[in-house]
Image 1 (tube, rainbow over the protein chains, first blue to last red):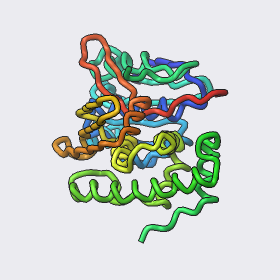
Image 2 (tube, rainbow over the protein chains, first blue to last red):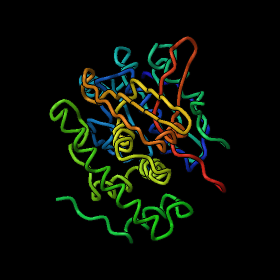
Image 3 (cartoon, rainbow over the protein chains, first blue to last red):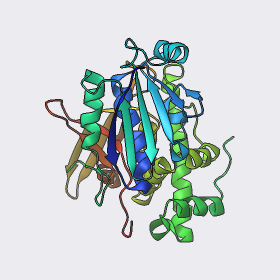
Length: 126
Length: 172
């Protein structure tokens, strides 16, 4: 069994759809051919189509081949870094990555750890 | 033909977004309805430049807006906040494409007090890494866009404009 590593990012509940949106964008910027899948198995070609307001989790695969591989084999040592799992819960957003040191996962985690919707506005340009 | 924007429906959407304080009066709602109609037109004009190149929807209209509000209210909230700041239809079209997955590639501002403002934004369209579209405006109120800009810079990476996020309102 191949496991993942969880990183929990506390967020105010009312900003969770935006946090999920930001997380997905951070991943899509790095995986330009990514495919998204909701918790009920629905596959989305674009982020625009995903209903983030009601999404409890989102799977983002590097590409269609990766999605197919996960659906056939589950997590393996070969594909574990080709999917990032985003989970929404009451107090924040959890990312599950195969290897937090893999460049894409590491970049996304660093980016999102700096994204805060807490008591203040998100980071803005001056 | 695009369905008309009915003020009661728009008011309900404004209330869902907690924006009744800035778009609550009938005059404000009528302004918002006009600006949204202009925005739908501008969106279609820009989108048609890349008919087959992008995964963005070809059209946006009131029906699509309501549908998006049910799925992603936070995106509509940013748009309506920009409407409340009287941003131009041109920049609303750009902002909305970014909400739907486009990326900001260039952002230029030229402003001289009591004289002129020019805002130019170039975005990369989702679904085609090569396709870009430019948006330009000389409307002073478009400077308000910068309130919504969210940037990110991590370690030695160059900073990127991640997108546009709604402002936090008093009481939230």
